[in-house]
Length: 196
Image (tube, rainbow, N blue to C red; front, side, top):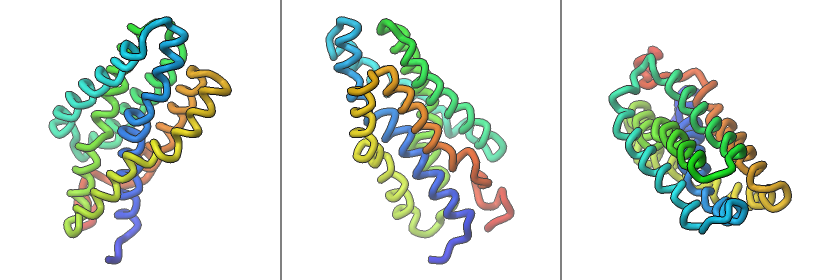
């Protein structure tokens, strides 16, 4: 199937969003439990509560996203969500107790709820009328890619420079994977950019 460059942009952006919102923000959390628990003098279970808070916030925002994502609001929402995701992740490095971590996890979850599955599937369904199942599967594959590729990199950073620096690396990766969605000139639907 021959596709114009806009369609490839949408697919690349969708892959990046799935990678950052799920692959990075959720699937790499476990790398940080042990070093945080050791430094704070708490159990790993208490630190793992971060993931539960993240999941609740992300799922809640996922339910809200279809009502707020519109053709004119797509790019501003993605930009705001990226700030929430990367900003809260970077701020993890400043925390000295669990409560700020929990609060930042909630903010991170809100950002991921905007960038995650709902937005990705909406974009794919709007742009790929034929074989949208295939393209959805391609995009969703990237929700696992960072866990495979970046986990060892993040682990190495944590071991050599500490978990605080590790979170800064994660924040940078979030921005990197979100860049196609932020910079590529596409819209929520092809008809919004005079493409049918």
